[in-house]
Length: 141
Image (tube, rainbow, N blue to C red; front, side, top):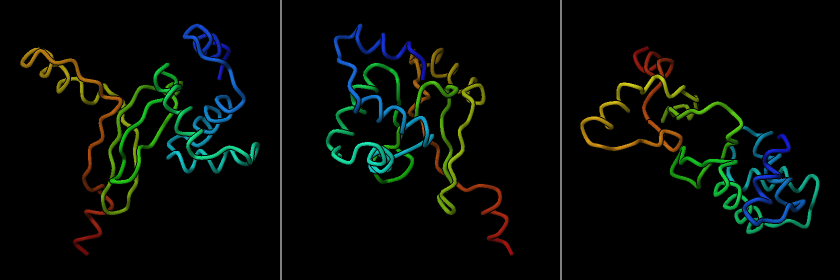
């Protein structure tokens, strides 16, 4: 977390609050986290914070482009910091393993969407569900 996010926050008319700083630090520490997981980390430093405060701050941080969310399961959204590399996710439905994938892997898909459909894809929210090789190979044993 550099100073840039603080400037972006103030430049967009938002106050820099301890809660926002704690929420962003928790997301960065956890990598991929649900609001409940963020709350657990934030409460290590500030026990008075509640879940609705975490949700509100995640909304602001996402609006500013500091965090993104994806739905890695049928549960609530999972958030990750944008300071990490741009990526999309693959999720094994059997073992629930989540892997971050470089967008270059989907370059031809993105290009086809652009040229054939006039559509600019936002891969940061993309999640592809399936089965990993380990789970598939263990099914046949």
